[in-house]
Length: 464
Ligand code: FAD
View 1 (cartoon, protein in one colour):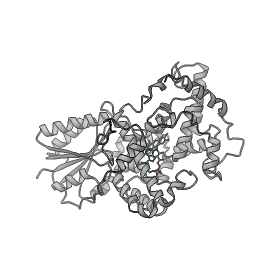
View 2: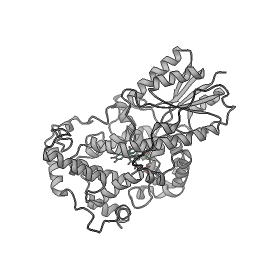
View 3: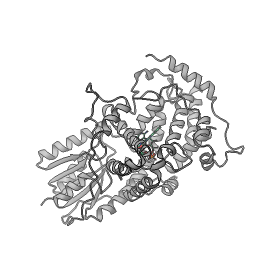
View 4: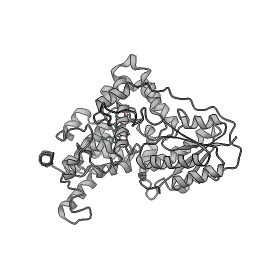
């Protein structure tokens, strides 16, 4: 019997992994992960993502070893690497779970055609989303643009039960091509190594994912609808990086909350709808592959951003220089607005920021500092451990007002009132800004009222 290959991508888990199950059912399975930084159109990972991926691959290797499945690590353009590996292993079948970005889909389709033409069995599965983005449409047959009807449709579907991890198999006994040494991939930061806070905050891998899920369902779900907006309490699940990297599947999360739905009602339903936002972001990305680079509402193409301004990023114009300084202050958590600065410092230290604070911080950057949402999106892409190519740009476009079912432009978050409402005792800002009450803490970098007025005027002048 020829061995089967399971090609891991954004599904770094053994349980609820249909591709792994199919390979294991064949008898003898070999796992492959390809770090592809060369194929056209594939977005290079940010720094925090690379850190997460490094540790995740170590955890996955252990989890798979316990099942008797060796993990091969290879770097290079995926089309070449997968072909070479399949040939070298003498594989009969190739399995993977689907990805939804356009360049990834094209690449996968090419490999599937090659494999079938070469006499192999090639099969892909649904594993990373509760619904396939092409499977639900509006009555007119197009993609959904508004969340509520989208989620009404999708949440009414039946979602399969999660699959168990395969039983340990009889292992692979043939000769394998050599796996690359993960340490040579350079995914951990050096000189400087800024990852200490990430390591304090997370243990990438399915083990921590399941611990967090169980703990959240037991202790957090009941009060989720109230506490989810409070950065000063552990009110949300913190599952986002595990969902991003597939150490937990949305089916596992869905069924875990579903078990307590009757008993908890609202908390569980609100949480489920957040999974719905994740689905909605991927739905948008599937239908708009340029989500990170193009306004979904083209009127925003005419918005007079201060940065990158019409003069271009390299300009020495004072206004452009000033915008560059404002951007740096925002990135470093030195805007003089404590809730924003706390969020930016939380992000830098832990690779994660609370959702409420993401919204407030993004709103300040885009609407008060006049900096293009794509610049903020890129910063989050580099610094978030949960950065994904759908949720990140979709949420930035939501805040900016340029996206699908976006927050109306005139909804400009006031960081001071937001802090009073959602961090009433100041414990969140106190945790992240120890110098808050000293002379070292900066004055606000912008006048909230005047910048709000300017933003609304600029918006008013956009072509409809
Ligand atoms: P919970 O509140 O426990 O929610 C459960 C899960 O639902 C999350 O883990 C996540 O997978 C999903 N979810 C919740 N809210 C959203 C949302 N608005 N959009 C999409 N999925 C959601 N989320 C990412 O996963 N990756 C990103 O790159 C990302 N970038 C963002 C950028 C901005 C500007 C904003 C405002 C939000 C962004 N979000 C992103 C959404 C949200 O902030 C995070 O998913 C959430 O904070 C993760 O924390 P949690 O796991 O505790 O969430």
